[in-house]
Image 1: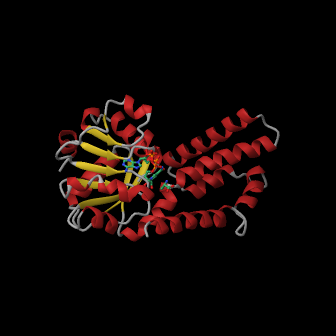
Image 2: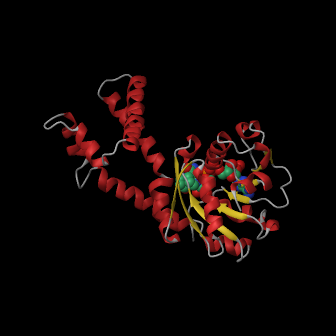
Image 3: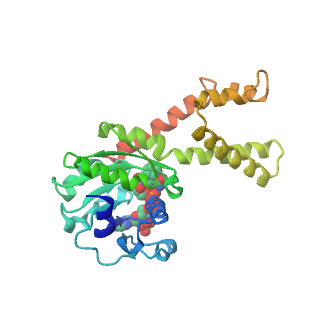
Amino acid sequence: MTLQDVTTRGLVLLGCGKMGSAMLEGWLARGVPSDKVWVIDPNPSDWVKSTGVHVNAALPRDPAIVLIAVKPQMMGAALTSLQALGAGPLYLTVAAGTTIATYEAALGAGIRLVRAMPNTPAAVGRGITAIIGNAHASPADLDLAEALLSAVGQVVRLDHEGQMDAVTAVSGSGPAYVFHLIEALAAAGESEGLPADLAMRLARATVTGAGELARLAPESAAQLRINVTSPGGTTAAALAVLMDPDSGFPPLLRRAVKAAADRGRELGK
Ligand SMILES: NC(=O)C1=CN([C@@H]2O[C@H](COP(=O)(O)OP(=O)(O)OC[C@H]3O[C@@H](n4cnc5c(N)ncnc54)[C@H](OP(=O)(O)O)[C@@H]3O)[C@@H](O)[C@H]2O)C=CC1
Ligand SMILES: O=C(O)[C@@H]1CCC=N1
């Protein structure tokens, strides 16, 4: 199966909330025809309804791909609505926690399934998605999933499903940590006397500018940090706080990432 099959036979998107919409936005922007996409969602947004995709319409008989993007807590009911499709399509799921075994139990042990963990920068073509197939997913199925997901960013393949909760905690949830960094940096600027709108503008441009530099520059992140840090200067004073081994970023992020990974494992039970 190829990307051409997707645009001929169609793509079903089950659940079109924040993540489903981010991916759909990316695909439509990159030329996937809207009349080849079928969205099922109890409360489709005005944006989804405006895109020209089929919304809560009868499904195609033989879709190439079914993308599952509902919350893990809703998965039981959602999978029931897919049982009629049987082992025909390639299933691609982005749900956190939910294991391959759960889908096989609900949809049939013989299904072809790719479990993926994307992130919301997919909406602007800057996502990163990790994928792992089940035993029945062929190399061509993985290639197809990768081709589809590459339309909205980078794709990495995992060695085993056990890595997925850590991936979820780093890159799936990670954008939220960065957005919170923007919020916290702006709030700190306000505490130092800046007006709120100026502080937010500085924080947002700094994080996005640093992100773009990290993407384009050949240097490591550590070297880019050193480049900002004049000896005895202001950055060194701040980094003494942020790099404190007991109270700085490293132990804080370790705790945060562990909490996310633990929650993924809990959702998978
Ligand atoms: N948001 C993110 O950054 C990421 C999310 N994910 C995964 O993506 C999935 C969706 O997350 P997210 O988009 O944030 O959540 P949302 O709640 O925004 O989206 C889920 C959508 O599914 C709908 N829905 C609920 N039940 C059904 C059903 N039975 N059939 C079809 N649609 C249904 C919901 O409708 P209603 O709101 O009315 O219940 C909602 O619109 C989750 O499994 C999450 O783990 C993965 C990576 C990143
Ligand atoms: O918060 C969540 O559970 C989902 C998974 C990764 C990002 N959002």
